[in-house]
Length: 251
Image 1 (spheres, rainbow, N blue to C red):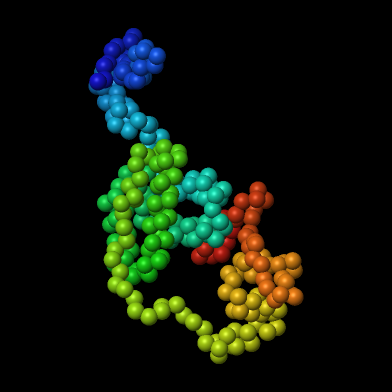
Image 2 (image 1 turned 90 degrees about the vertical axis):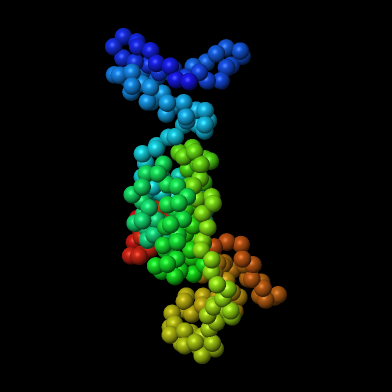
């Protein structure tokens, strides 16, 4: 339990915590003007210690500010450039406008589930895209919970996307030969686009993989390509550059 005592002109709360080598230990904090204030803060500290085992740091940080922190301190060091760009786009277009004003500690499963449901109702996003939005939220809050201890649990863990009807047929567009010829004709005088597109067409490589090819990746004798790198844009510190997706401007 929380005990309060007066020390001089201020009050102090005290909570007994785990013993060390058989010696009783206490968590204390002083400087409160009233006994009621000390009891209130002591109760908060008691709950944090006994029910969660860790402190809630940065409880007043907005979700918008936290997302910037997550990008700068985790994503830029651990994820591929293309993934970071995707996350930045989702954060700017969807997360900050609808959830960014909430404190990180205010987010709960109901709030996030309602947000996902409303996106489904309002925009009819594809299942894949909606999964990407939820994946961004889950990843950000997982880091907040398990890596930096900003929150005591991940409220997005049990959030799910709405049920989608099974799509019959292949929704992916397959270019016809006529369309391929039109594209090649359009860029016939721009070699770096023409041959890059031609390479992607015959190999199925991504754009970043095509532009990452060097001569040593090509085996002319066996007529094979080896893909062992791709192209990313980095800043002067060697980290992926962040972009405003809508305006294609570097941040």
